[in-house]
Image 1 (cartoon, rainbow, N blue to C red):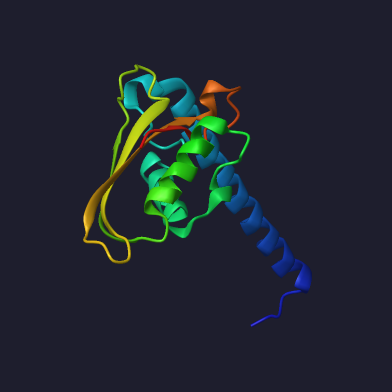
Image 2 (image 1 turned 60 degrees about the horizontal axis):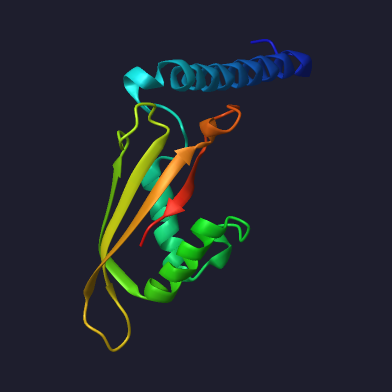
Length: 157
């Protein structure tokens, strides 16, 4: 058994690192090209990220936690909805959460998705009640398409 020089191990590590980075970049570019060029056929199969369901789940968590910074204040429509939802559901205990997304929400380009969050909530000294929040999310493909990341563009009670 011969002992190899540190240069040998360094070159193996650098080769593995370059291969991993190239593989990751290739997958990202492939997924982006699928989303940009084939999205009318397949819908949002790979990207945009995060999914509308994840955006809805994160929104509900921000509402319950009273996180007013979840949406920037300059985004007046959705910020107003966030404040309203915090006033209504903030600090409540929740259970039976259901997040449903419709990616074919009335348009043919699959950029917009309607997300409905249904849950049961309980404020102190009240009974369990049904709650529902509806959001419209969109990828930033409505802006110059760099990478399609999904965000909330409109709320609705």
